[in-house]
Image (tube, rainbow, N blue to C red; front, top):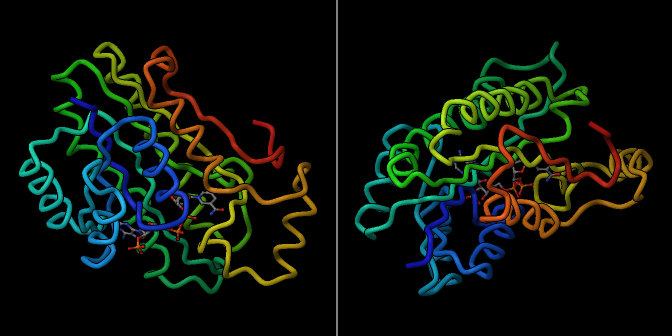
Length: 241
Ligand code: NAP
């Protein structure tokens, strides 16, 4: 039976590209969306090679319901891609507490909840791959994104520590850190902001979601089995780690 991969936030952008790539790699892919309609669309797209499930990572009850649904499908994820993430940008001086907590609750507390849900199955199988989608800004910093940058830096630290806990069971935990990728998340930027960002990228272009999916595909594969606790940067040279 094909290995099962769980990809959070698979309804669009980077997560959709990852789900698509992993299906083409031969895995059974469970992709999540925040709405029932989004989940149904994923199911329709993946057909018999996967399924869509509704998931709100900031809500423990929703995470539990998602794992119950996965059990009903008689699937145990051996691959987890923690991709779901949000931004609520503001300068620190103006940032509301809700903007801080929304981002932390989704990007880092959510990652804790979902990862806990897959860990036991991976340890039992003595094989697992966890990839967190981080961000280049975790290393660079970014004005107006202190909440988001804090969450992405925390996610990298989480991956490094968890990797050390589970390495002896053949479970790897890594981060893929995208640079500036063309998705809905970056579509809100003004022309000036986009031009300023592009001027800083040596490759002089935004990345595309498929380029992140390629990196994830490698890190969940059999061949990457000796790579753990690492961050793979995919950013067109924007930042050299
Ligand atoms: P996106 O186009 O905004 O898509 C976000 C995805 O996450 C959607 O599938 C969305 O589902 C889901 N999602 C949002 N809130 C959620 C929640 N509370 N619970 C569960 N799922 C939720 O974003 P993207 O650009 O593809 O980003 C994907 C990941 O890459 C994020 O972790 C982001 O931080 C990271 N990243 C992006 C860039 C970039 O330049 N785009 C750069 C660095 C890192 P719905 O469709 O149902 O809303």
